[in-house]
Image (cartoon, rainbow, N blue to C red; front, side):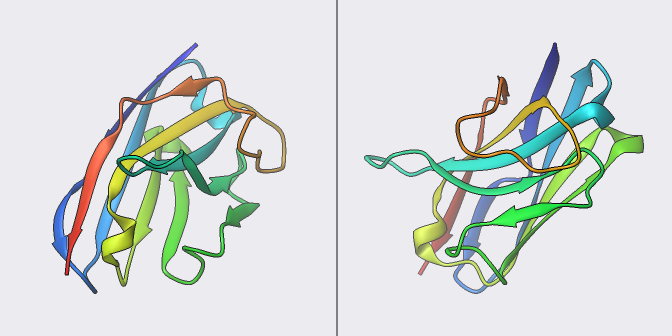
Length: 124
Protein backbone atom coordinates (compact mmCIF):
# COMPACT_ATOMS: atom_id res chain seq x y z
CA UNK A 1 0.00 0.00 0.00
CA UNK A 2 1.09 3.59 -0.54
CA UNK A 3 0.21 6.73 1.41
CA UNK A 4 -0.02 10.06 -0.39
CA UNK A 5 0.24 13.58 1.02
CA UNK A 6 -0.30 16.66 -1.12
CA UNK A 7 1.16 20.07 -0.34
CA UNK A 8 1.77 23.41 -1.99
CA UNK A 9 -1.75 24.69 -2.33
CA UNK A 10 -2.73 28.22 -1.45
CA UNK A 11 -4.18 31.50 -2.64
CA UNK A 12 -2.81 33.04 -5.83
CA UNK A 13 -3.92 35.79 -8.19
CA UNK A 14 -5.05 34.99 -11.69
CA UNK A 15 -2.05 34.62 -13.97
CA UNK A 16 0.13 33.39 -11.15
CA UNK A 17 1.79 30.05 -10.53
CA UNK A 18 1.85 27.33 -7.91
CA UNK A 19 3.68 24.04 -7.64
CA UNK A 20 1.94 21.18 -5.91
CA UNK A 21 3.80 18.20 -4.51
CA UNK A 22 2.53 14.76 -3.70
CA UNK A 23 4.82 12.79 -1.41
CA UNK A 24 4.42 9.05 -1.30
CA UNK A 25 5.40 6.57 1.37
CA UNK A 26 4.98 2.89 1.69
CA UNK A 27 5.76 0.56 -1.15
CA UNK A 28 8.10 1.29 -4.01
CA UNK A 29 7.01 4.61 -5.45
CA UNK A 30 8.78 4.07 -8.74
CA UNK A 31 6.42 1.23 -9.60
CA UNK A 32 3.36 3.47 -9.33
CA UNK A 33 1.68 5.48 -12.02
CA UNK A 34 0.27 8.76 -10.73
CA UNK A 35 -2.59 11.07 -11.53
CA UNK A 36 -3.91 14.46 -10.52
CA UNK A 37 -7.57 15.25 -9.99
CA UNK A 38 -9.44 18.28 -8.74
CA UNK A 39 -12.88 19.01 -7.42
CA UNK A 40 -14.53 22.38 -7.16
CA UNK A 41 -17.51 22.99 -4.86
CA UNK A 42 -20.70 21.64 -6.37
CA UNK A 43 -18.87 20.05 -9.30
CA UNK A 44 -17.81 16.55 -10.22
CA UNK A 45 -14.28 15.35 -9.80
CA UNK A 46 -12.11 16.34 -12.74
CA UNK A 47 -9.24 14.13 -13.95
CA UNK A 48 -6.72 16.33 -15.71
CA UNK A 49 -3.16 14.96 -15.61
CA UNK A 50 -1.32 11.66 -15.33
CA UNK A 51 2.18 10.25 -15.57
CA UNK A 52 3.63 6.78 -16.03
CA UNK A 53 5.92 5.16 -13.48
CA UNK A 54 9.01 6.24 -15.39
CA UNK A 55 7.77 9.71 -16.26
CA UNK A 56 8.11 8.92 -19.93
CA UNK A 57 4.41 9.11 -20.71
CA UNK A 58 2.07 11.89 -19.66
CA UNK A 59 -1.52 12.99 -20.21
CA UNK A 60 -3.19 16.37 -19.91
CA UNK A 61 -6.80 17.36 -20.29
CA UNK A 62 -7.46 20.17 -22.73
CA UNK A 63 -8.41 22.44 -19.85
CA UNK A 64 -4.84 22.49 -18.51
CA UNK A 65 -2.72 21.62 -21.53
CA UNK A 66 0.03 24.15 -22.05
CA UNK A 67 -0.40 25.60 -18.54
CA UNK A 68 0.21 22.66 -16.20
CA UNK A 69 3.14 20.24 -16.14
CA UNK A 70 3.23 16.92 -14.30
CA UNK A 71 6.59 15.45 -13.37
CA UNK A 72 8.07 13.06 -10.85
CA UNK A 73 11.26 12.39 -8.96
CA UNK A 74 11.36 8.74 -8.02
CA UNK A 75 14.42 9.26 -5.86
CA UNK A 76 12.35 11.62 -3.70
CA UNK A 77 9.13 9.60 -3.90
CA UNK A 78 7.36 12.70 -5.12
CA UNK A 79 5.20 13.75 -8.03
CA UNK A 80 4.83 17.43 -8.89
CA UNK A 81 2.28 19.59 -10.61
CA UNK A 82 3.59 22.92 -11.89
CA UNK A 83 0.64 25.21 -12.54
CA UNK A 84 1.17 28.39 -14.54
CA UNK A 85 -1.20 31.02 -15.92
CA UNK A 86 -3.74 30.10 -13.28
CA UNK A 87 -7.37 31.07 -13.80
CA UNK A 88 -10.21 31.51 -11.30
CA UNK A 89 -11.81 28.39 -12.77
CA UNK A 90 -8.80 26.40 -11.57
CA UNK A 91 -10.00 26.92 -7.99
CA UNK A 92 -10.56 23.50 -6.43
CA UNK A 93 -9.24 20.92 -4.02
CA UNK A 94 -6.43 19.09 -5.80
CA UNK A 95 -5.81 15.40 -5.20
CA UNK A 96 -3.08 13.05 -6.29
CA UNK A 97 -3.74 9.38 -6.86
CA UNK A 98 -1.63 6.28 -7.45
CA UNK A 99 -1.80 2.75 -8.77
CA UNK A 100 0.76 0.11 -9.59
CA UNK A 101 1.62 0.71 -13.16
CA UNK A 102 3.51 -0.04 -16.30
CA UNK A 103 4.98 2.15 -18.99
CA UNK A 104 1.80 4.10 -19.59
CA UNK A 105 -0.39 6.61 -17.81
CA UNK A 106 -3.76 5.51 -16.45
CA UNK A 107 -7.22 6.93 -16.87
CA UNK A 108 -9.74 8.41 -14.53
CA UNK A 109 -11.15 5.24 -12.96
CA UNK A 110 -7.96 3.25 -12.59
CA UNK A 111 -6.45 4.54 -9.35
CA UNK A 112 -6.36 2.71 -6.03
CA UNK A 113 -4.81 5.19 -3.59
CA UNK A 114 -5.65 8.82 -2.88
CA UNK A 115 -4.25 11.73 -0.93
CA UNK A 116 -6.29 14.00 1.31
CA UNK A 117 -6.17 16.97 -1.05
CA UNK A 118 -4.83 20.51 -1.00
CA UNK A 119 -6.84 23.65 -1.65
CA UNK A 120 -5.95 25.91 -4.55
CA UNK A 121 -7.76 29.24 -4.77
CA UNK A 122 -7.24 31.60 -7.69
CA UNK A 123 -8.54 35.12 -7.23
CA UNK A 124 -9.58 37.32 -10.13
